[in-house]
Length: 565
Image (cartoon, rainbow, N blue to C red; front, side, top):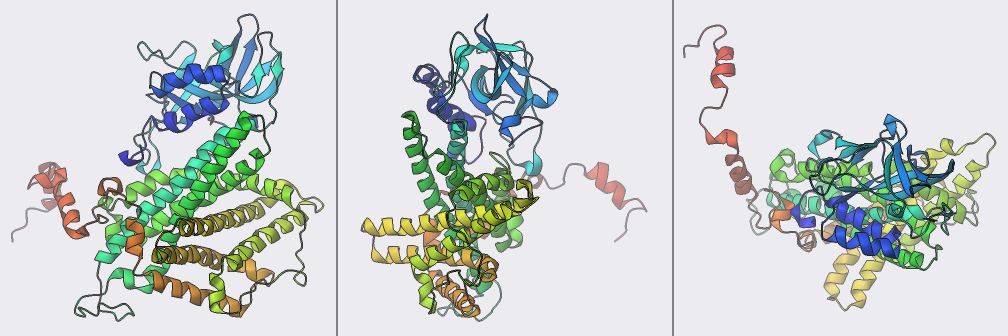
């Protein structure tokens, strides 16, 4: 599915519907529904978002009310704003939906729970009575054009009681509600989706970085002396990738890609470990994994969306061509900053968790620790880098703790502080993942030169990220002006040291040309010929005189009489 190179109507069937059935359905439900879904005898989607509510799970308006007499749930959209909306795969393809609805028994509301709800007949695909379903229409930027984002509205629609996912919470035949061991177990499905998104962000940014790196290596502009001028042929113009301004923008993006892929692997392992524990009734890791996945989803998808657009800018005018592969990539990816949790709202969830973990906090500059860097090379020590990330995140959490107890202060007044804390902690997780990734490669006996290059890339990620937030470090005097200067110098050193390896680093992603979908980023480097060939295949270029010439162009030319030249 990755290499099909587009989002498909069955994407959420594979990434959400099937995994959630196995994770949150009982053993009997998994045995019944799982094979049907895996064989595509049913096609499902995940329906949480409503017309009137998205992130606020507790205020969803769709209800599932138990009818004891018929042993059924009555699924009902209580208002038109309760209509499920934006649901990928629902507009045309899905036969079933995994619906989040508020569970109600004898008038008591037990909050949102998951239900497997048949939507369309398996005989003729017609919606069942009581189900109004359709497509929500075109989306912004032309992205997600292959996804049939849909809506569904229920009118007292009955489904069997057994269609409620019952691995954790349960409802018996006599209507007894058995609560789950943890009130937030429903968040497990969101953790799964967000763990996928961390890796997805890394893949997306890696793809853009590959295209931009290859193209700027091919592209030459101006006879400008640089430290990396082609000595073998000084008559050639300078490669765009050799300009320091390009390197300072592009190389950190490559480093971010590697860091996010490392964090994606770590996030996946954390999710699988948590899921195994949940199956045994152990919920001890749920809060931590949920908080980390929320923070990483926000930070990584922000990095990726911004980085893809930066790659387009790095590529100059040709980067704006559809044939560059960048514009389609960006328009398809940028919605990730909103779906599965708005990137700004999600930061509050991480901040709440971090606030609960605080033990000692101080904002007194006289008591605060100081950065231990003495020489420029001290910035290359992993313990120095991690100490800086830890200090920033810890200090910001301490500031939040103090602000939260001020008279008259309410949580919504601290949204900006939550945003900063979440990203500070997520950047620490990314940096640690990158450092551990390099250590893992070293332990596997990989060639020393390869390890050395990956270490430089990890260092560049850490130091570039620290530099981007220097204001936080200067605010409490953690770093001195001299250390800021040495930090900038070390970043320049790393970029210069990596210059000969960046093509190899992006080639290592091993993306085939088909997947990149770029005339400018193909592995053979034949960018100009491929761009020319792509343009020649356009329908408008298959005729000498364009359609509409007589109807529209002639009247403009002749409005004052035909010109006589």
